[in-house]
Amino acid sequence: MRPKESATERIFHYFNFFMALIPISIILLILAFLSYYSYRAIIYNGTNFFTSYLWYPGQFSRNPIIVRGILVPYGSSFGALLFLIGTLLTSLIAIAIALPTSLIASLTINLYVPRRLKRLSISMLELFAGIPSVVYGLWGILVLEPLLFRFLEPWMRDHLAFIPGFSGAIVSGSGIIASGLILSIMILPIITSVVSDTMSSISSSVKDGAYALGATRWEMGKYILRQGSKIQTLGATLLGLGRALGETMAVLMVSGSVLNTLPDSIYSPINTMAAAIASLLDSAFIDPTNMNVYALTELGLLLFFITMVVNIVGRTIVGRGILRGYEHEI
Amino acid sequence: MDEVIKTRGLSVSARNNVILDSLDLDIYRNKVNTILGPSGSGKSTLIRTINRLTDLNGDFEISGTVYFNDHNIQDMSAVELRRKIGMVFQSPNPFWMSIYDNVAFGPRLHGSLPRLKLDEIVKRSLTEAGLYQEVERDLARSAMKLSGGQQQRMCIARALAVEPEVIMLDEPTSSLDPISKSKIEDLMSTLKEKYTVILVTHDISQAARVSDFVNFLYKGKVLEKGESKEMFENPRNEITEKFITGRAD
Image 1 (cartoon, rainbow over the protein chains, first blue to last red):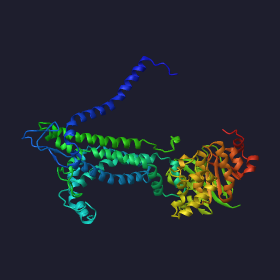
Image 2 (tube, chains in turn green, cyan):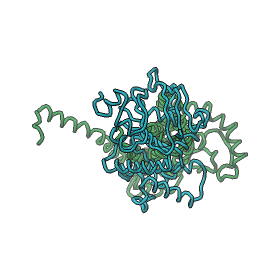
Image 3 (tube, each protein chain N blue to C red):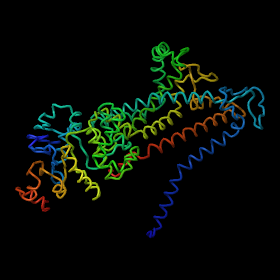
């Protein structure tokens, strides 16, 4: 039987319950706000939003017209395909670079770095995550872009042109490669810290078990640490992806913020959903029908859904069965 | 008598704590050699020094010599040494793979073998560990799904799969139920026909049941060593006597 609760305890209980509701209410409120602001755009854009890459604000000097019962600027079109492609492409490049780098970094930290330095190297890495993204962007413009433009991109075009998409005009350093690289640096800490934590939480009796069979350090890392952290690596990658998808400032600074032109090679400038919202919002407010703002909100709603799903799946996976069958040792 | 492993003046310390103090031990071929002693007497450190798992942790300082077949183990490669001297740990430590992959782990490390040969090794090792009949149909199942006792016998099979000369068992039954425990104890008498067995235990009755030779380790020193029967019936050392009669602190 439950012991009787005193009045204070009961008050405290309800207070806690109320506090616990706050985060979920905030998410629901954001969702409500996004839906309210974007429903007109959803009706107006229809599937055009996903199939067209043309984003025209319309001519504000001419009278607005009514389409499907909604007042929109004359000649406006809101196709998000370019931003979708850009977001996907830059995030995938970021993952493609960050994932192997994180795995190697985590293995190195767990296999070769002395115990005392281990903690230091992890906290150094986590410091990276705290650098404001505008600083990454600045570094990207001042350092990374000239390097890409002068050295890396010409080299890639000369030597890797046989890969589809690797031949084409190099206009400037900004674009897909710069965005992907910056994003990879930004998501490296989160992936590495999750993977490396998981690897160090693997029971030492399992590690010793592999050594006792004559495994070298590297073999132990490859078969025990890497295999044992597989699921968490997937989860961490999704968490990194979640960050890459939504990253705005740094990408805005190095993407080239192109509109209405699909990339024709990996050297092309690009735009992403997040960067487009930030860069187009200012001019959107001039639209007397507000449709430009609504359309950007629709973009925001889509981004919200995508990152939400990726993050939830990522978190669920990371939190699952870290020790797998070795729980009794905690 | 044929000694497989000899330690001469073996001392181990970690962070200025002496764990083992100039041990002279002999491990005899095809016998069950028991290292008996209370918790904290240095038993585990001793066998970890023998297969050089202590190398992996920079804290240990080792002096004296361990000979394996009359070779100083420091002159051998650690990988080669650990292949020849297998080890089973205190609690079962299956890898998160199938039973088959667990047992094949060692052989795969040491060279690529044709599938048929590997199948044969897995079958032989599991049979020697007395587990084959129970898992014959489930070799592809995750080893994590086995019971604790089965897991431990699979770990024994895993150690046997690389065809070691010596197999060291570090309190192998301490986390198991009585039935699993007696299965593993029975196993030791068959294992010694082919392998040299080193059993580390603090369980006096277990030591009495299975050992041929006993080394009584106490606070980092060997207080008494000899044939099992003689030591349990006629301990010469006062502390040994206290321990085996259950009066030790």
